[in-house]
Image (cartoon, rainbow, N blue to C red; front, side, top):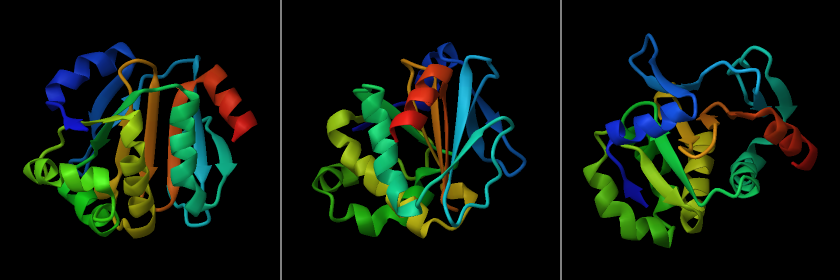
Length: 187
């Protein structure tokens, strides 16, 4: 895992049709440009309150299964690395996940570096071998998250992909239509 300067990541994301948008609360979200080749999957759990995007396919899921399903999606896409971006500073995410991450060996080795980035939105590059840390973060946000300031975005600069994790138990996945069809069939 390593933090990357925020501005250095944006050109690669733009190449995939992903742009940044600031909302009325000062949170900076990443959004996929509208395209007929993209589909949004709205994973809705029993606690979800986030409304689906227009034309999203709604899939009911148990909240406790969502972290593993996200990691499975990344595996099905054969991604060796993803980019993880908080909508606000990392501090909200790290505080939310601190207890759970304290037991993860990979995170323990990385914790001192992460402490230096708590007041930033610098993207975190996470490799396939470190997806366990990502799964722990997602689980903690879904179980302990209390505000939209703890929303987490997972993306790639290699393919059009945008995964949004909301503390209310909702996950939104924007990807190519053919990929969405495969995910719906196989998850």
